[in-house]
Amino acid sequence: MLKEERLDYILKKLRTDQKVLQTELSNDLQVSEDTVRRDLESLAQNGLLIKVRGGAIPHSPNPYSFKERIVFHEDDKKVIARKALSLLENGQTIILDGGTSTLSLAKLFPQHLQLRVITNSVPIVVQLMDHPGVEVIFAGGKIVKDSQTVIGMDTIRMFQKVRADIGFLGVCSLHTAVGVTGPDIEETEVKSTIVEASSRVVALATSDKMGTAEHFKICGITDIDTIVTDQPEDELFIPYRQMGLQVL
Amino acid sequence: MLKEERLDYILKKLRTDQKVLQTELSNDLQVSEDTVRRDLESLAQNGLLIKVRGGAIPHSPNPYSFKERIVFHEDDKKVIARKALSLLENGQTIILDGGTSTLSLAKLFPQHLQLRVITNSVPIVVQLMDHPGVEVIFAGGKIVKDSQTVIGMDTIRMFQKVRADIGFLGVCSLHTAVGVTGPDIEETEVKSTIVEASSRVVALATSDKMGTAEHFKICGITDIDTIVTDQPEDELFIPYRQMGLQVL
DNA sequence: ATAAATATTGCATAATTTTGCATCAAATAG
DNA sequence: CTATTTGATGCAAAATTATGCAATATTTAT
Image (cartoon, rainbow over all chains, first blue to last red; front, side, top):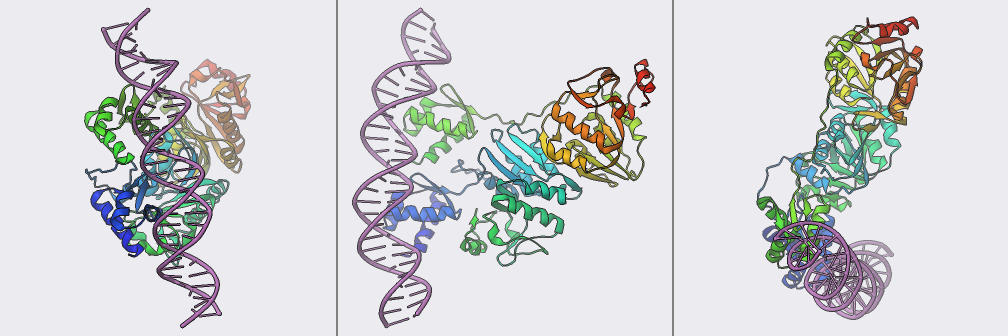
C-alpha cells in the first residue's frame, strides 16, 4: 500500500468521523502505530489536520471547537483570520500589515491575549487601542487616505528597527515563479521591510490570489513560511507545499 | 476518547447550560473529577471559560470594555477650537498635539482647507483621514491607550525633523512663573519637542488651567506665542498679555 | 544495469504526558 | 465552629510519543 493511499484514507476517515485514532488507523491500514504517527505528522505539517495525543482532529479554525455542527457562513477573510489566530501565542511580538485580512485578525484577538503589535494600519490601531493586553506600536509616516495606512521612509525605518516573531502580510498576489507581488510600489516596499523584519512570515491570502502576479515584487515565494487561506486542500497549493511552505 | 472531545463537550455544554459542574462532567465524560478540573483549567488558560468553585461559567460575551470618555468642558473646547481655526491659512504646515481640544479643532476643518498636519494623536488621524485637502503625517511610536496618542523616542524623532508654521498644544497647565507643565513625563517630552519644532506655538487652554502647574515642565511661558481660551477677558490673563503673549 | 544514496518501515527502548488516587489545605454551608 | 465540599500537590501506573537502529524498498547517479 502506497503512502499516498494511507494519507488519503486518513483524510477521508477524518472527514466522515471528525476524528481518527492511531490505534484504529494502525489496524485499518495494517501498519505500525509508528507509521501512522509519522503519517499524521506529515499531514499536520501541511496543515491538513491537527495532531493531538492519541490521534488527530480536523483542522478547524478554532482549535477546541471540535465537532461543531452549527456552521457559520463566515466570509473567507474571517475564516482565514480565525486560522491565523491559532498561530499566536502570548508574549509574542508581531507585525500586522495593512489590509482587511489583518484587520479581521485584530478584531478576533481575545481579551486575554498578551501581545506586542507593530502596525502601519490606522484601523488596526483604532481596533486594538482599547485592548487590555496588547501593546500597540504605530509606525509613523505619511497617511495614504484610501488604504488607511502609513507608508514612506519613516514607516520603513520603524519596521527596520524591529525583530518580530511573526509578520502577517495582508492579501497580495502569490505566484510560484514570480513570488509575492503587489500593485503599488511604495506599499510593496513597506511589505518587503516587514518580511525582512519577521522571523516567520505568514501570508493571508484568499485562494483567488494564488497564481496571480502584480507589477511590484515584495519577496520570493520561499521568503514566506506559511500561507493561511480559505481552501487549503485545493490542488493549487500542492506546488507551494512542495517548496516547503506550510499551507493552513 | 480524545482529550479534545472532552474539551469540546465541555464547551458545548457550557453554551447550552450556561454553566458546568465538575461532578456532572466527571459523570458525563467518565473520567475523574481531577481530570475534569485539569480540563477546565486548560480551557480557562485559553480564555474560553471562567473557572469557578465547583465548575465553570462562560466567558463574558462582551470582553471589550470601552472606556467611557467623560468630556469636560465640551462646549468651552468647541469655542476654543473655533477661535483657533481662525489662525489657520491654506498651505500651512501645522502640528496638532494629542488631546480633545486639538481634536475639536480638527473636526472643524472646512472642506476647502489645504493643510499639512503632523500629529501623534490617533483620533485626529482618523478624523482627518477622509479630509480631501489635508495631508496627514503620523508620528510613530508606542500607543498610550488612555490618551490615544503615541509617545516615546520615535515620536520625538519624527517631530524633530519637522518645521511647522504653527504648533497647537492641547490643554496643559499654565503658570506665569512655572511655565507650561503636564502630568506625564513622556507626554511632556513630546510636547516640548513640538514647541521647538513650531515657529508659532498656540496653547489651547480652558481658563481653569490658568495659574496651575503639574510636575513636568514642557516649556517656559514665553515660549508660547498665543493662548486660545474661552474667557479671554478674564483678569487672569492680564499678566500673560503683559509678557507679550496674544490671548484670544 | 548496478551501485550508492535516500527514504520508509517496524521494533526496542527511553522519555514524556495523562490520569486517578491519596493526602492535606482551603473554602463554604449550616 | 464544625462538617462537608472543593482545590492543590505529590505520586505511581498506564498510555503515548520520541529516538536510535536495522531491514527493506525506492530513487538517483554513474
